[in-house]
Amino acid sequence: MACDVLGAGRRLPMSNAAVRHLTVDAESADQRLDNFLLRELKGAPKTLIYRIIRSGEVRVNKARARADTRLQAGDDVRLPPVRLPERVIGAAPAAVPAREFPVLYEDDWLLAIDKPAGVAVHGGSGVSSGVIEQLRRARPGAALLELVHRLDRETSGVLLVAKRRSALKRLQDQFRERSTGKTYLALVRGEWPAARKVIDVPLHKYLLPDGERRVRVTDARDPLGQRSISLVRVLGDVHPPPGAAADAPRMTLLAVTIKTGRTHQIRVHLAHVGHPIAGDDKYGDFEWNRLLARLGLKRMFLHAWRLTIRHPVTEQELRLHAPLPPELADWGDVRRFF
Image (cartoon, one colour):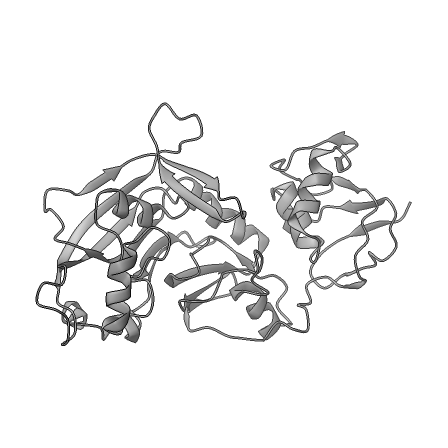
């Protein structure tokens, strides 16, 4: 039976719905099975990928495998018949716009960009394309471009993209081992108590009936709860622009360093202790958000400000910094802090 070694730019004739065998190349070593298939079978719905894995139709070296199975170079991955349009692996759909983003750092191994608010990091869940698809479209000659981590759609700031499979693994290991330093800027309602410097509250992910992802606080008895730690430093009080009512709620600008990278962690932690983030449309104070919008704040005030990592090859410390974007820095008297 024909056996394809897949890599960026190789043609995959998926229009022939038949059992196929893929050989894992060196750049894909140590990747999870689900991520490997999502990358190689671009265009396949995630639900399909996970269904064929759960059903045992996908085999690794002739054995059943789980979604989190780590692949090794030379592994044989058997795929059941899957019918997709024939196309070139790595090529973005024609509808995806080519877009570059402000570069904070770049070398042969990784790229750090300043992601704007309002752009998803990847397509899916009703979003046709995101940062990674647009970058691939803008850089058709790139052998590999893969997200190292995620940012919420409405969060701006530092986002890492790997340019080599080995760099992706080493950087993701740092995030998994919590050896990175991730600090965000957040504007919250109310006066933050100076004594509150740590929020150590577990979080539980769940889905709404329409499939939208949400997170809530839980306790240590919850088997699905994940320990989540946020460190909070007060930068100072923020005064709104002219036109705000004299009795408008006070606001505090915080620098929040997360020791764990849970989904929506900062948003849920801050709302849980009574200080929701300005403009947060999921966990915030909606009446307050409407007031802020009338005063010119049109987005959530959460920005991935600083990220410290070790370079995946040289091991040197990299301190990445994304300046606060103008729509936040110019709101009220925020700029006096920078």
